[in-house]
Image (tube, rainbow, N blue to C red; front, side):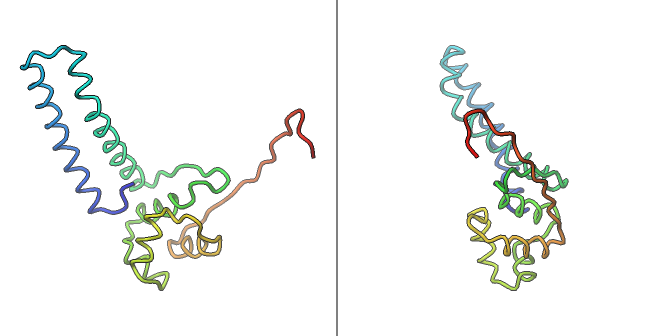
Length: 148
């Protein structure tokens, strides 16, 4: 996951380089006389990496536009907190100041996607980002054979 503008710029540049490298590599393989199937076997792992990087760049761009994924039973809350910070253009350093913690704490928490944080801590982060999280509780119908 891309967490800041510097990482985004680096990933975008790497993506451009990878596109060119992949294209050049494909041409060299064709010039060497490899069949389409052989070229596919050689190029597939490179394309897989390229697609993953492209997905990360697109995801960061969506976050910058303020587009967020829905949460299910609070799963993904950590990514949502990171996403909120990115969407608002707040640096990890600035968030640390707002939370009155060291920047390394925010960096470590984000690297771990806030795994295991308390709800109180999540609420403080939401407050520091001037964000509100709304929830809706739905009770699923019991399946047959389930006991109460």
